[in-house]
Image (tube, rainbow, N blue to C red; front, side, top):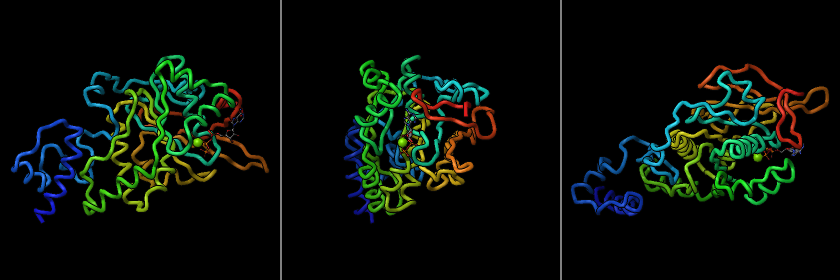
Length: 304
Ligand SMILES: Nc1ncnc2c1ncn2[C@@H]1O[C@H](COP(=O)(O)OP(=O)(O)OP(=O)(O)O)[C@@H](O)[C@H]1O
Ligand SMILES: [Mg+2]
């Protein structure tokens, strides 16, 4: 048993020292690690991130930027008017749920475009599906938003992550550790500490996992990492066109500080879009659905 744990430790240490830049462990530390007590690893079950971060951003960097509880307008004026505070709280995670083609990606990139262009807020869009070039091309063609220029100005970046790489890593850890997540995963490399980050989409990530339980544990860690970065994080979930369930496992909407739903409804034979702030822990907000349209200027709320 201990011999086996020793092997695992060598493997874990190999990964950990890269991140910690620490000296090789002593015998007693190896023993402690075998008992799950080594200081480099958290004792909390199912926690894979000793520093609470799945992203390549150091804690000291995050501490330098402390805007805790600050309110940041989304940059979509009519949407901000639905919220009493007039925006979203730094450090909050917002789930955007909706059917295919309802404008989830447009909503997020509209917010990022406006925040980055008008207030120089730093935005990172993580794509689990679409090719970054294609996304930028569509945004330019459909709405005239020049993300290439924003990238050059250093306030915007798109990071492409293959969901299969993430899932394979996590599931390998489960196989080796009999269900306990204690080994560090490869971090998602970010070019800078963002004010706003988006993950598009959790649905693409979830289908890469063979076991739903593994996905659940991973996203629990993911939400913790997002909170730790103290930015506004949008996570997208693909649902039915008139959803009653807002995410794959239900854990996502429980973990999120806010849930925004984009509906595509059939009314008298016609399709109409409506948006709803279903939950927002940071502020009171308009209750109920509000119509919106997608136009050459992006999402236009409240003008049916
Ligand atoms: N200029 C425009 N005017 C009107 N509608 C547009 C315009 N540009 C794009 N659209 C519509 O926006 C929708 C796509 O929006 P978007 O890609 O943001 O949706 P999504 O919810 O992210 O979709 P998916 O589920 O594929 O990820 C399409 O239905 C498209 O027809
Ligand atoms: Mg999309």
